[in-house]
Length: 173
Image 1: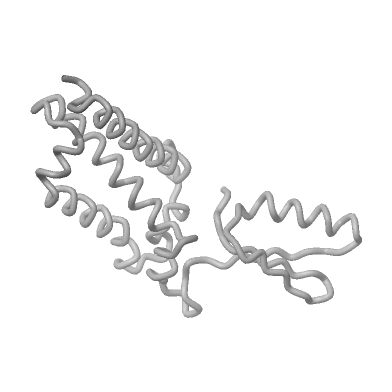
Image 2: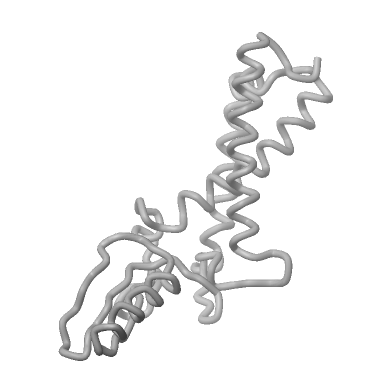
């Protein structure tokens, strides 16, 4: 499984190169290993996780620019939002912008519940699974599938809202 993390490459001589940005570990490790092999050096690749030095979960780091939190929460909220928004549009004839304007508390409630549910595994103090989706992979419900579905839902909401603003009303009415 590929995980996204900061990559630190340690050469045989002991020098450390910090990639200083988030990358997929396996391709970068393979790239550095092949470059190092050509030069006759053995490389050891280690990764930095979203944990504190004492092994605890770091909420601030997970919500940072390179953390998993923002995309996970936005994707999960978008999946809930597009489903509820389309159902409400079909039932009432209200467009997405109208629904957001008339029911801001529902939007805030969904985002709050999704955020709480996202960080609940870390609050339980489990060792085998924390809030990072990459720590659990169950059959069809993979972290990659969740990211793709969340991104699709975010793009879908943007497209529906754009089309409804151009049309001047609900998409299906």
